Amino acid sequence: MLVHILLLGCSGSAQESDSPPSEYIRNEAENPGVIVFVHGVTGNSKDTWTHPVSGAYWPNLIANDSAFNGFNVYVYNYPSPALGKSYNIDEVAENMRLVLSNDKVFNHKQVVFLCHSMGGLVTRSYLLKNRDLIPKVAMAYFFATPTTGSEVAGIAKLLSNNPQFGKMLSMDSDSYLADKQRDWQSAGITFPCYCAYEVRETYGQKIVQQQSATNLCNKRLDPIDANHIDIVKPANTGSIPYIAFKSAFEEVFTQKTQALNDWKRYMDVRITSGTCPDYYIPPTDIPLIEGSMQSNNQLYNHPSGYPTWPIIADIHSVYNHFVTIESTLKGIENSWIKLENKFAITFSVDTAAAPKDVDVVLMGECGDGGDPRYTKTVIGLDPANAEKRIPVSFNAHQFYTLQPGEFELFAMNFTCKVPGVYSIQYELPFSISGKTGQISHQVREEKFRIVCPKSYTLWDTGFLDERNTLTRIETYRWDGQTYQGKAHPDVGATTEFREKAL
Image (cartoon, rainbow, N blue to C red):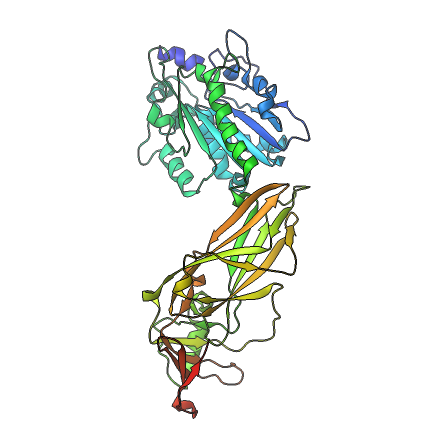
């Protein structure tokens, strides 16, 4: 019976010598999305999806269903002989790259994959090799894909010269499938991945077990009362495989119609710090010695590079976060983003983490670089405000728009009110063509957390062309309500404390 499985494979009929083409079943220029069918081993783009009795062809069923309006339908075909030599799975993925590129499949804004059996492995390999395309993938549905392998593949490998079988052996830690599993997980795939598994045996043998068919999926798992071959041959639009895919499709795209929850599909948000001057906390392996040229040179030439060192919020002036929001809809016409003019800022604080008696260096002076366009608000960093959503308006305009590839720059200004280490989250409403969403960006980089120390000594490196030595300037401490500063006597200044009100 395993010979029958091998010869019939995923198509359910003996392969013909004339392979059907990769082609669009529906290709209307105004449709922004496309559904891509990918068949499995020994299958093809025609027989795999055709019901043997009713003659229903799944791509045609979708093309004629109004639920899929706005999406073109494309079937990808690749060689997969039952006995002869052909591409391995990774080579099929390269072939897929050539064919889909030639047919401009990824010129669509949104791409949906419907995969059967090994077609799911081919699709994953293709996306891992072309990761720049992943943001356009809206969802994938994997029908009986042997993600952790299939016992039947071991028998088929002995009977066939097709190397595709050898890549689908039951997974162990150093196998092909194990490498693909690790690569997929490390790629941080977030688009919805649905899975279906076969309930019935094929000629007395379960081709893909449930645990293999459902591995790596992040959405629901659908049991289908069919064998491995019939699981992708719906007789009509009322068949369970058809309903399972349609339900998943509507779940994904109905949500996107109501709210644009996945803002990362449309925008890139970056945080930088442009405070000038910057006050850095140097590594402990640099001995800071008054008047030392050697210490000064070590600061500038340290292998870690001082721009990577922690920065404290200067008590004399504000600390800036520059929030850059860029549209990633490059090359897509008639797609502009509307940003509202009001951020909501929430910050959390760890008061115990505030450094005490730390050395801080001022790495040179600042030139006049000008101000960012939207610097208006100063927020006092105080644990009493933590976990509260503080509104910040930019009143120059009611809203801002991003054309494809454009960006806007917003400056958030903070001052130290209470010592601690502060983490910031930004939220901003946006809309695209009437559909609304909200950016929610947590500042996670360690270097952009805002540090307000309990006490510190300030050192000045000066200009290298004027004073190539290190100088202690002043010592500051928090007295419970405000900072107090004391000029260092070594520089000949007064030793009186002077209160710095914030």
